[in-house]
Amino acid sequence: MNKKPNLAIVGATGLVGSTFLKVLEERDFPFDNLYMMASAKSAGSTVTFKGKEYVVEELTEHSFDKPIDIALFSAGGSTSEKYAPIAAAHGCIVVDNSSAWRMNEEVPLIVPEVNPEDVSWNKGIIANPNCSTIQAVVPLKPLHEKYKIKRVIYSTYQAVSGSGLKGINDLKEGLKGNDIMKAYPHPIAGNCLPHIDVFLENGYTKEEMKMINETHKILGDDSIAVTATTVRVPVFDSHSESINVEFEKPFEIEDVKTLLANYPGIVVQDDPANNVYPLARDAAGKNEVFVGRIRRDFSVENGINMWVVADNIRKGAATNAVQIAEKLIK
Ligand code: A2P
Image: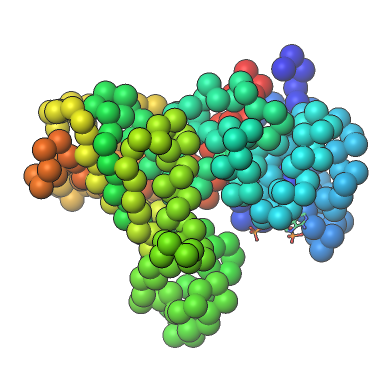
């Protein structure tokens, strides 16, 4: 792209949408015109970006009649299903944060530290992966390249911000003793819910299957055995994950630590003697993936355990989408 792109933010009034704006501003993303879009409910309201007020317009079938080069979507799956193809047909490239397009064979699913080259085969829609998958595949990528991963076991501890404002409110109220349950079927305060998204016939939740399928697609290797248990915990921001990995090749644990520490987008925090390891509260508001508790799994021949934490709204959603947009304008 030679000129500065025209941008649209679809879902500009939402939690991820407003974080798109924060990240675009922090990274000084170049743009010519900027359009804020949301549902009819928000039409006419204003959103501030770089000190300027923008009027939110209702997303309609005609929203992309004007020239828009890149649209960042976070307005739910059904909105993406309907409007992303309309935008693409008008020559716009959509970076979509919903799960609607992720497993479509015509749609690249991208984590810029892992498979940026997949941007080249987009046909107008690029999918942003699930939040818990993004932070997992960043450390898995260099390990897979060097030691070839045989099997991965994910156990997640996911923040309520992943359920939007409803989830945050359920926890806030729960901490005050009001067990409201707008986001979850059980109280979240004082609880761990082994239930994220809906249950499927195979006994897994949709969130667990997203982690499994998206890991295969992003790493481009269906031969890796992957299983997952995803759990919602009473934490406001940042997902934490225990990741157990088994390799085909032998390794030195110090080499694993060095490999991860030198990889873009990763910060290793691993000094247990001084109580240093990644923490959800420390990761909140940051763009990197934090990795610690890196240790050998003595129960198998070539295995490790690690603890991986990232801000689910930033690297797990908005930051990753903006990084994809940065690849598009390069
Ligand atoms: P609105 O605020 O007008 O409802 P969150 O994930 O935080 O709930 O935010 C969802 C975002 O998606 C909001 O900006 C919301 O706009 C937007 N949205 C939801 N449904 C639609 C729709 N049918 N068309 C356009 N935007 C939508």
